[in-house]
Length: 344
Image 1 (cartoon, one colour):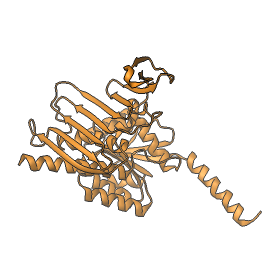
Image 2 (cartoon, one colour):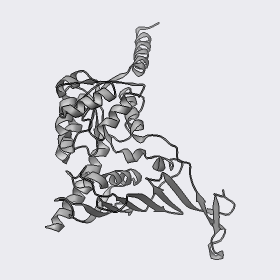
Image 3 (tube, one colour):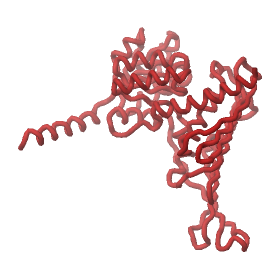
Image 4 (tube, one colour):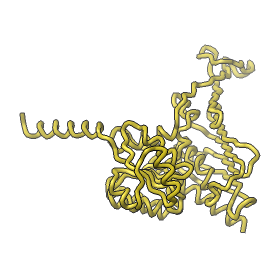
């Protein structure tokens, strides 16, 4: 057996062993959302939760006791004990923490938005590229079961309407509504539309805070697709809905109810859905059929954290890459700056 063949088999065995090893991971920030990162990472089979760090000692103690994990007294000590870190702090700290992690050659999962500014995001991506580490961004709605129910359909939307409304709470108000709520839908729209952004028109209002609380954006893409996105954090009720229209198909998603509905135009001899409405005789042998694709029940946060672990092992790629997070941030900043300019 030649040396080349031997080295090949050694390399393949090493790759296989790497997939079996657990990834040592820590959580930075154990507030409202961070506690769920700890919860899931303590149970994911491919992860070994090393511990947590938070500037709030009381919160640190509470979460460490609840999930039987170690408290680290400094960020650096946690970083040096891990292969990867999940960053769940307020957005203004993302860049500094991620840079410290990446400079130590650690993979990072960063909750959305990736950073406050594009320059910070670009710096993180450049450092990650140079270090060969993974950056994944927590745009959790990309993994909403109601959206994934459409995986078997070919989506080429020409018009998208999205509403994301929420009652007022103080949590999240340190950032404008565009970066708090709308960025979820910006990311989804960018994933659905395979074209570059052409023009953006936006407007908004500040009502409860010193920042923008209600925002609307109309995004036109180079291929002619239009997306109209509305976000508010002072609504009476929660609303998270998306409607997408394309040639011979209309899709509606209720992210809160986990409900996905599809209306398709097909020939009469084609498959029939739960209900069929024939078109008038001038339309020939076509009919509109209604379909309700099954929506599987799973926890999107656990899925994206599992995806992060598997990506580190080389078994897959991040569902939302650092570059994806950067593009969503870019559009969000453009929208926000346009609104601020109009308000002043």
